[in-house]
Length: 325
Image (cartoon, rainbow, N blue to C red; front, side, top):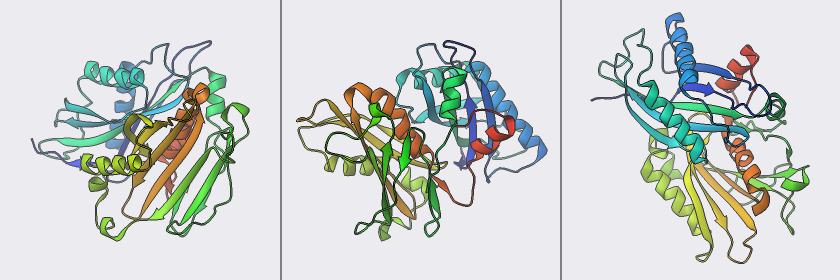
C-alpha cells in the first residue's frame, strides 16, 4: 500500500489517572500545516481525540507527571488503522503499552471527510499523558520563562523547579545553557553547578541537505546513539536507549548512563538533529531521585519550538482551559 508521510499532523490525546482525587482529563487535536484547515477537517481532529480518550485509560500505577508517547500510524481511506509503530517512547513501558493497547482496541479512526491520499495515509500522533491529581497537574502546568535565540529562531523552556542560566560560549557551539534547580532533591551533583547543559550547534554541512524525515529515520537514530555512546566510558552501564521527541517534528535519541566509579549517579544524554542545528542535552541526578528527574529532563526536550510558532497543543489547551504540558 502506498502511504504518504505527514509528520506535521499533531494529534494530542491527554488523559489522567485517578489518584487521590478526581483526574483532569483533556484532549486536543490540531493540524499544523500539511492537511487542509477546513471546518470538516477540524471536526475530524476533534473526533480523533475524543475517540482516543475513550480507549486510552491510564492505569493507577502510572508514574505521576506529564509524559508523551509518539506513534507512527497508517490508516486506509475508511479510517481503519492498518499499522501502528511506537516511534518515541515515554520511557515508561506501562505508558507505552497502555497507548498501544488502546490503539488496538480502537481499531479505526473516523473516516476522513476529504480525499487525502487515495490508498492510505501515514502520520505521527503525539499522545500527551497526564497522571496525577488536579493540584499535581496545576504544578506541572506552570512553565518557567525559557531561552529564545532569535538568530537561530529556536526556543526552549524548562518546567519547575528548574531555571535557566545565561548562555555561555564554546567553540563549535551557538551556545550552551545551564539548567539549575531550586529543589534540593534535584540539585546539581556534588562538584557540579548545573543539573543540565543544553547546547545548540549549527548543523554540519553534509547533513544540512538532509530532510527532517532522513534525520529522524532509524539509520540516523543509530548514528546519534553511536555518538552518545562514544562519550561514555567502556565500563559504564548504558540503559534506556530509545527515541525521544524534541519539539513538534524532530525525533532524537537518548541514553541513561550509570558511571562505573559513581554508581549512585544517573546521567541522561540526548541528541536531536534538524537540517539547521543539533540540539544536545546532558543532565544528571542521583539514583534515588532519577525517577522524578527523568520526565522533567524529557519535558525540556519536548519544549523545543520554532520562535514563530506557539506549540499547537499549548494553543488548544489554553482555549479549552486545560492543563498545559
